[in-house]
Image 1: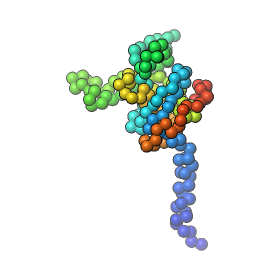
Image 2 (image 1 turned 90 degrees about the vertical axis):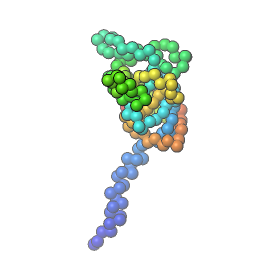
Image 3 (image 1 turned 135 degrees about the horizontal axis):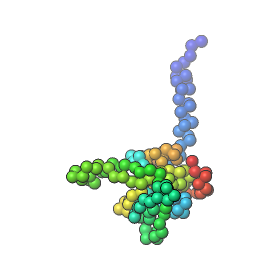
Image 4 (image 1 turned 90 degrees about the horizontal axis):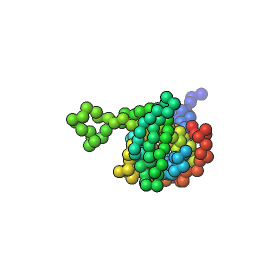
Length: 177
């Protein structure tokens, strides 16, 4: 009996269909709840950025019981005037944009503290790493980059905005993946 090539080739692609079905479609902008801080912000989902960034000011590193911590204030609005303290996960080196690079300086990167933060988008709660920097000149206080988007199993459709709706997660940090 002779096999027909088209049906056989079609069977090779069927396993890949299940992978795409597991992804969640998000828009270019989404509402994100910062669990533990109990704050909802508008976020920009940026597949061209590797890391996530949260708008913060007065960022200070310090030691607590021999461990590295960071204290900061949210640079979102004046209503957030209390300091936030989190363990320092690491320090990230972020490449400067061409317009921000001073050729007289020998550094083409900036060092930023990174913390772990539980973020809720739609019904998905994930623990992601975010670097802290003052984003007050930008429209969105939270930028979610490709590494965090992978944790959300996200597909980003830039023609959509707020596709996931308002965050609706159980905010127990133990449930965050």
